[in-house]
Length: 199
Image 1 (cartoon, rainbow, N blue to C red):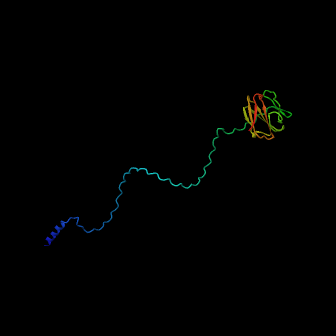
Image 2: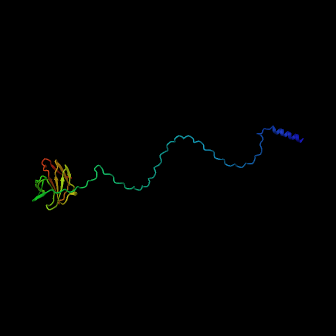
Image 3: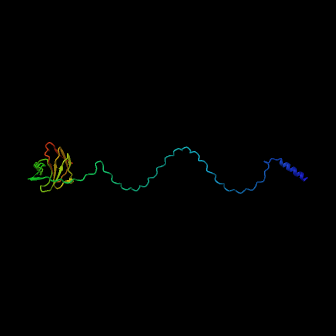
């Protein structure tokens, strides 16, 4: 009887779909260990360039930098460095006649008398005294500039010996103790003018 009941129960349960049968919930298992990292995937293609962002606010002014070292002096310009003063020329043979001065020409003849007191003639510029020393400079070019620093107290004689017109520039203000004498040594001033200008 019991066996027949059991068989009947088994046949009845076997005819029920397994999806309908629900068993008791089992206990939760232990969490497994973390698996190993897989290989890195292939880098994807570069995305499109994004739109340009808005201009940011202007930052605060930074601290002033430390001044750099002073640079070397540059090369001189097209004019070049100023030349050195030339050596004083040899005073030609001369003689005094009263308040006039006379120079000996290269050919041995004596030139015209020049009144160094300035009362006549264009050869005198400035003051001076008869007892003061004499400095001689020869002019052999079409132009010549007399520098104030080159003048001495006394007679500053400039002998012009140039085959052509000559322009001599002298300082604007000459002390009364400085005498400038322009001497026509070539003897051609009548045709080759000697022009005196002030700086």
